[in-house]
Amino acid sequence: MTRFYFVDVFADRPLTGNPLALVPDADDLTVPQMRAIAREFNQSETTFLLRPGQEGVDRRLRSFTPAGAEVNGAGHNALGAWLWLADQGLTGDRPAVTMRQRIGADVLAVEILRVPGEPTRIVMDQGAPSFGGLVTDGARLTGALGLEPRHLASGAAAQVVSTGVAHLLVPLATREAVDAAVAESRELAAILAEAGGEGCYLYTTAGDDGAAAYTRFFNPTVGIAEDPATGTAAGPLAVALVRSGRVPADRPVFIEQGHRLGRPSRIRVDVAGDRVRLSGSGLVTAQGELRLS
Image 1: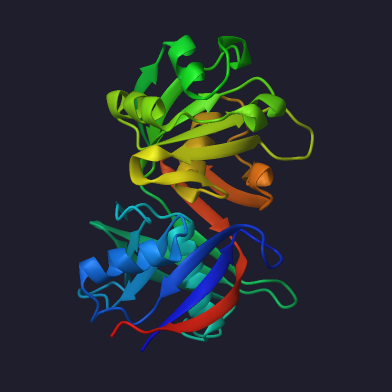
Image 2: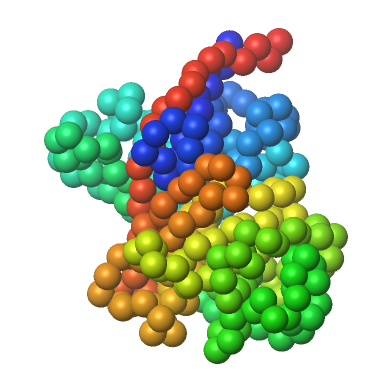
């Protein structure tokens, strides 16, 4: 039998944040089996833990969506895996330890932080930022989101940004506009393909709860209708906000997501030049066994 776990990532209590299905000790699984398991769990991503396979790497991770697309960025798929490893005592018991993970072709640092009386926090490096194309047809873009051009924020452009995975960041004027969006998957996927983006991250900087942005994420290109917490999009957004001067460069960037789905999540990103670090906590909420034969 094959063990599996569920981890609620970017959560401070069960049944919030973004649920991750995790399969440890997955070296004997074939890629078709991994894809079939991801389809069975039907979470936005299922992560498989593998032996590192090279010097200087502690763990190798592979993640798949229910549609079978492999996800190579360091987001909740990786953060949840390290939360599980820490929960199982597989990262030691020091207050701070740094390890290295391989995701796709990238080898990235991961820090596990423990403070007595507080949940374990995982801090992960993402890739260096890169800025892609703009989407300037506001009517077409908002139409694909069930909105109107008046819902777009003034003074900011919809642009593809990557810190490992390229996503289209779409600035909206209000939280009400973010919550009102209804993605038309086929047209949105066409826009993303033309722009060179994988997913679409709607955001607004309006609000007074201490968060830098309030967000929702749609990714029809890999079969994700909506994701409650998206680390691979939060990193690019934090970079864009810092580079544009909309948030201070010397402070953590907190991003709210998942409220529209009833799974509130708070994501932290620290930006220092080209170094982007995603962090958060969570908890293991379920475990079981898969019968594959």
